[in-house]
Length: 363
Image 1 (cartoon, rainbow, N blue to C red):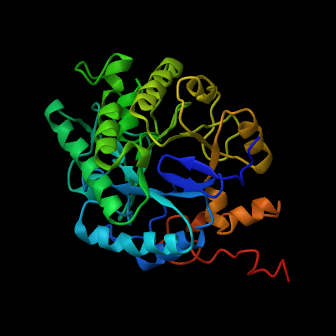
Image 2 (image 1 turned 120 degrees about the horizontal axis):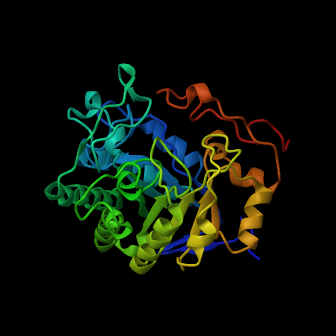
Image 3 (image 1 turned 90 degrees about the horizontal axis):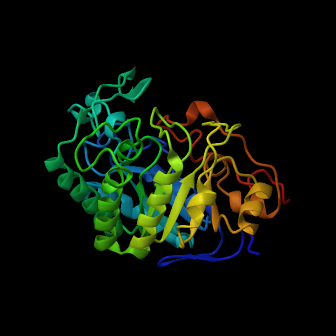
């Protein structure tokens, strides 16, 4: 059976190992959503990952409501991403861009307009803004005639990603973001062709994925879903048939891989008693499946051995350990995450985490 340290092919990408870096928002771009030089250092430090999935990257100003998060809708943003992808490639790594529309999780103080969603709902809690945390706003439902424009923004961002040197893209369709707001029934009260039945609620995911795959190649297109439990107020009363249908749709498109963020009862970030959906989805998705959330080396190997997972994506362990692959190979201790610097704008808690070599463990 494979281990985390065996090669793997994901569509057009040939990985040296199965330790993926999961997408994590870090807030180190400019207020104009332009990537910075520090971001090139951050990703290059972690280039030993089999594949880096970038932090979520805004596809449009409408869809990007997080302070200091990067975008991919302008020529200036494309040019600023080039050093990031170049430095990762020079270290022998691979990197894909995660494409992001926040939907109702955006805030008008950042976007300049009322947030949009499947329906007139609001995310519970408070949004991060440049003026501190503010209550989330009630979104306006996207009109059917607006949806082709949103899809075109995904396509533009995907093409921009390839132009900027990314090896592919991932469509962010989980974690309570726009596509997830259409998918799951507690946030979608539509009565048109994008609401009601499972087939209708899947329509936006299917249309976006098909359009992006047509633009940059299905072998360079992937999708992230969060199929079990509530995330930022988004949930479904009957997730199994919904996500089996999603697996079939994505299988038919032939995407490079499907990543699932699966919460557990004892999750350190998000917890739920809703069972994992990956065993049911696995039977309907023939491509590579990547699993995520609270994995350690032993648990990762169990899911590789069973055939449930083809690789594992690690989030916060990669954040705090630029040499995570080396540490896992040697079963060595890990740095702890500095939670108070997750979304600050400086180098602290971003590019200053020590590697094993820095701490002279091998001296």
